Length: 198
Image 1 (tube, rainbow, N blue to C red):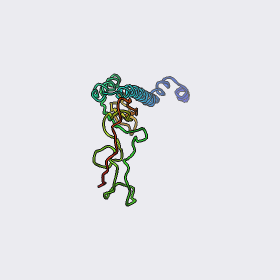
Image 2 (image 1 turned 180 degrees about the vertical axis):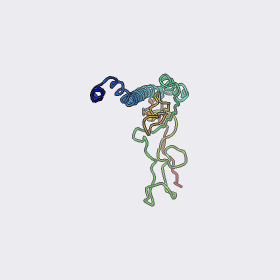
Image 3 (image 1 turned 30 degrees about the vertical axis):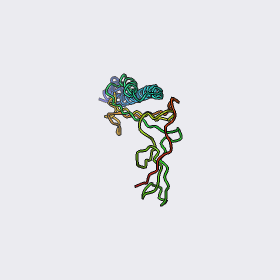
Image 4 (image 1 turned 45 degrees about the horizontal axis):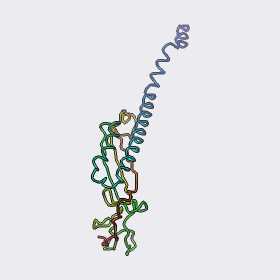
């Protein structure tokens, strides 16, 4: 009996398959995570290249008439990688690079840090209300700085969300670039109108 127990304890046949079965799930999740990360990085780089190309096309005179064609460049590049992706485009025009994402100026009469209670403000984008971002929507005019943003949402190609908590089955990335329109005409800005905060 002792000999049989000693023989069983020293027998290593089948140990490799058991060890492999224990390591395989961890190895598969790690590989899927690496593939998912690589895919997302590749998609991000392709989107960045496409948006740079589209933004350059947007800076010439008359580009606003071909918005669908310019956005189509980005859409085709992304759909070549992820056919099920959905894209959202946003263009904001500013008078200069320094104005990007800046609020409209206002006089803070009551000193509370917000534009309210009838305080005067400069209506830079001429929309009749104070804005935390002074941009005007669209392609802008000659010499304007235009912030071109694209948000892409696509399903993950690997089922990583099932194995890693906090992950979703979709992935969203946002890319943006800012370029100045070519000097094809006079910059039609003029003095901003004045308004009062509500």
